[in-house]
Image (cartoon, rainbow, N blue to C red; front, side, top):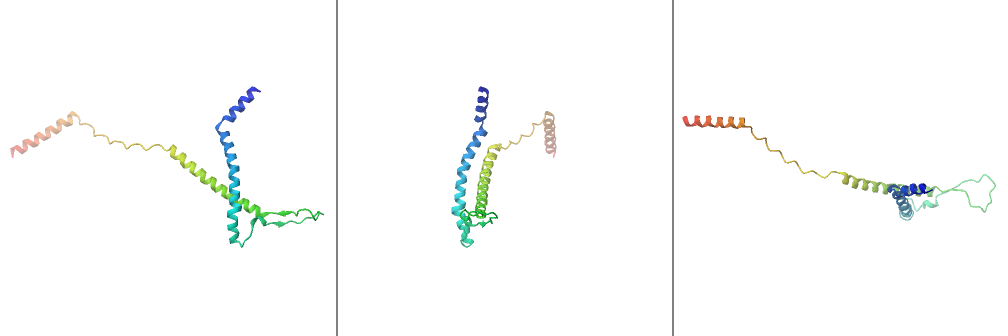
Length: 149
């Protein structure tokens, strides 16, 4: 039992598990925000363009082939709620996309190596003794020719 508890403690203390737990909690809270955004802000604006149609009231009454109590709630296919849920999903997916894009940009900037200073161009190699002596000889020849003229 002690070994089990130690393994469980090691599992819980891993960063991935704690990050996942935080993500689920924040995701649940964020879900209520996007649901409110969809139902309270976006759908009323969409309803303006659709002539005041309320998506939550869109439904089809399904037939009841069996003898059902007339006082019972009718069997309804609420496709308006489904449309709201789909819009809500796309809003959440768009927000998650922007969050992931921003995080990736930050991570890439952190991984990017710092710009190295441009390399100082190397000085030309020092002439060898033979090259120096050849140059001196040529200069002396030129001076001798100039003196004879």
